[in-house]
Length: 474
Image (cartoon, rainbow, N blue to C red; front, top):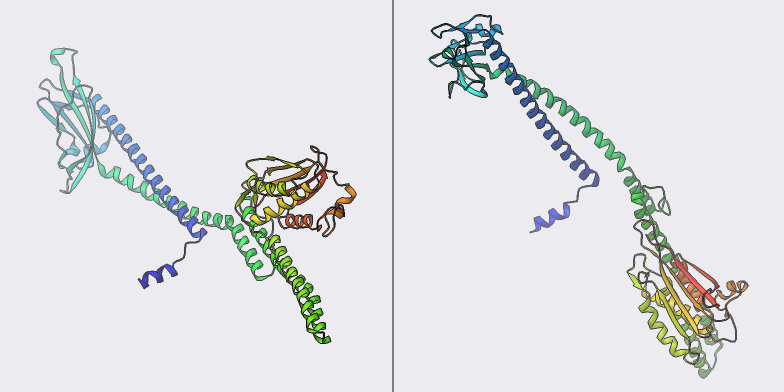
């Protein structure tokens, strides 16, 4: 068992380059093998067809020069079409089969040619057989291809004198075998050379095609070492989603780290004054009752400061790759509570939400965003509030963004007052109850999600419109 665990720990998946090179090599070798087999089969079929045609030409030439005597003895009146027919055991043989016997060429004297099988052929019948076993003139075993042609002898155009005969022409298979061996040697030599060249070429191409991946790895290594702050944007289209996601992750982590540092610094700065007050009271020798009262006040103050800073840190952070959250169900929960708080005003909230609209982030961030925007709208509305949400299309396979807007039929906000209203601790109207930090929290949240907030006049209700645009994700 320990040996298997050691093997799995030591085993590593093959690299992409090794996988592609192996797959391409196997495919190339298989292709070349199939191509070589196909070429070999095609050449063998062509060579056999040429051999058949050549033997047929010999048989036709012999048929034109053959005569028979009155006693049907074979007489060849012309020179053979190839001198090898007159050389015993030359590898090219002639057999003439007649009803009452047969005749052979001089070359057929000595070797034991293949048996004739069916013997004579019907007139105009042709056969091509082989390789058939035979015994060479030196006694060794061999084989031959045989072509046969069925003919009819009619010297005087008299049906009474007609008789059938068959011409067989045979050729030793060693000639065809030699051709095939030469062809196969050259084919596999050339295919092997082409294969090596293609393997080298595909290795070079593979190195070139994987260069962007190595560049991504090198840039990521530099980011890890702190030599660069982010990855470059000059990458192939297929790698852009990966590099964009890595850059977004790097920026998110850097922002989170900066946010934590700022939160700790703000908390330390906020607690410095209460601690200084307590130290002053202790050093002043105040009465126990006054000291206890001051301790109670300052401890409550510090508790509020800690709670506020922790809540701020929690609302500022978000996950880069979060599950999509529906808008309508979260909004309904918030609106039900606000309708109870502002029941005396009788405000009606309407929804115009696309079912495909989704918020990609923390549930608490969505609750904070909707809660502050809707509460602000309820606070200033006369009778109506409108919540609109629809997805923001994204190119390629990236996730969609979100456009979220809250309208009211209140007095609206003058363009020159928009920047002031969005400041922390500033209220649009000092007579209206509130702390003036809700819209600032909304603005901070939108900044964390790299979105934008626009405040303008509502075209539907005439009051203020707070429009939030969250960009598409990686």
